[in-house]
Image (tube, rainbow, N blue to C red; front, side, top):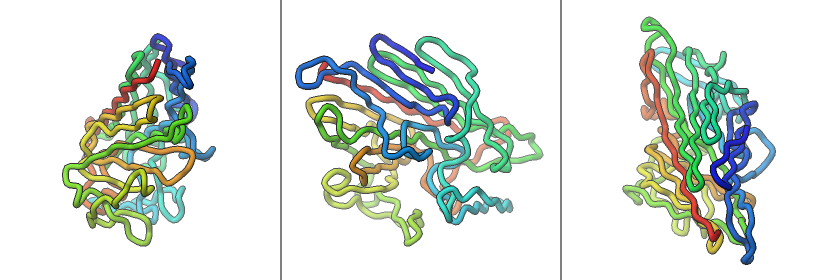
Length: 283
């Protein structure tokens, strides 16, 4: 489905994770009017393109096994041997509401998640900003008890736009302890380290950052500027590939339950994440 606000056009693929498949905004390239595509693609794999919601967990769960308050849960090892990015990013979603500039979609968390629940996603578009709200609901009864959750949005942005290369400006509350360090398995193990010198531009990274000071800015000098704002406590910054870059707000780091950094969602309650993109161009 397509949402429009002035000349801005947002395409949502409700059949495949309710992801943003395209965001075209008016700009200029070499002095000529041009549509600028702010959503990128690294690969054609399910997690390699667009901007998709990740729930009820974000990032990797080690060895696809979650242990929480007496529950031992085996998850699909879709990033073998680990599980990654929840249960809703590849599934069809139901459109609950739709207007010219906004849409609300919903998807249950599916049989691979032992707690009954659903994800709800809202998009609101204007000519110069997009507001996104992702909710992860616990639909269980009181006897079912609480469930763990940590959620996020996983956008890909083009590395090159209108002949300019993306530059990311990100700061954290404590730069000396900003990076959630990874062990040999590629998953955060609780240690905290400083952001490497030159990262995330001169030195490419794939890191979870704690205490991000939003907005994070992605700029294609002389072409476009994108501000990513969120209420999330964490952000994954990915700059390792030539095709695209990522700035992913997340409410918790990968393997959050093992680190005691998950959120607890009570029956009838929801965990929410808010993200806003604001852009400006040479148009």
